Image (cartoon, rainbow, N blue to C red):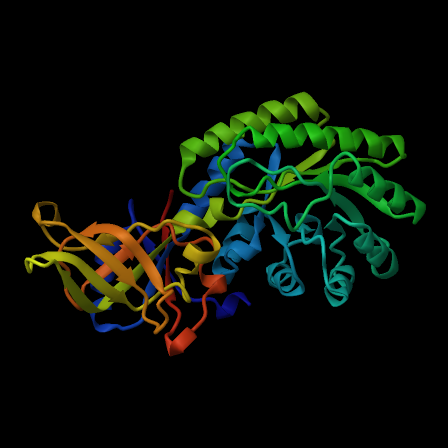
Length: 396
């Protein structure tokens, strides 16, 4: 697979997006372009190991399944959170051992379980009795990780309505069922919600996990696996530091035994800040007030909510735009409404920006576009999804 991967260009000191735009002749292209800084991912990995040394990061592949990113994280030593057969196949294709993978989808098709069994991916989450019976029939050798519900009060994307059992009643019942079926339970997992803003939610969930461990041990299980899920920010290292402090304190208090393996499922943490999306303005329209004064400028870009900006609809992301005009600080700013290229009126990127008076052919850059963008993008209305250029620092 590696021989098919695209070229990586190298830079010194700092990635210069404006210089890349000039060198790539983007003014002549109608297709949007992603600029990926792989060194951003590497720096995030090093920061994780520094701040959360006991927690193994298992990258959530669904966040961005770009093979170049997956290969880099595999080489750095990360584990992986996979949700499907194809994600497993992608990760295993880079010689990642099955022990570094958690099949963290509590409701899996049988054919996907069969593939996991064939490749000895034993660790997988479960949150209901029907899945326990399915595992008993199709993969009885697997290690059951009981996923319980413990959501943050504030999260970008809550997950509790879909996944997770009640920590007090259901988790114990599932372990009793597994015991009666002679299945192996090795630990528990939770997810406070993607893009967590209530940082104390981690401590609350880790306390619940300790109680589940105690019950499992009463049943005779060797409970040695804790998955603290995701929710870590992708572009706010100060916030990540605060989360790390809370997690470290809670883990030290409730899981002091070093024999317990603790993992997490960071997705946006690794890749959000690594991507800058460059879009071209292919059309503009002016809205004037009754006195004829320019009130709002509408711009139409070559990417929209059916492409990379699907993150606005599905990930509740608020995007920011950068322009590349000279002497921009001294130019007057106007209320700007930005549309995507499709014929759907839902295809609105932003209506709250203030930008200089831009022209057709000018470029806009959108930082922090690496998470939950490209994997969901589609060529709706016949508009191409962006290509990606990859860069990496000679040394970081």
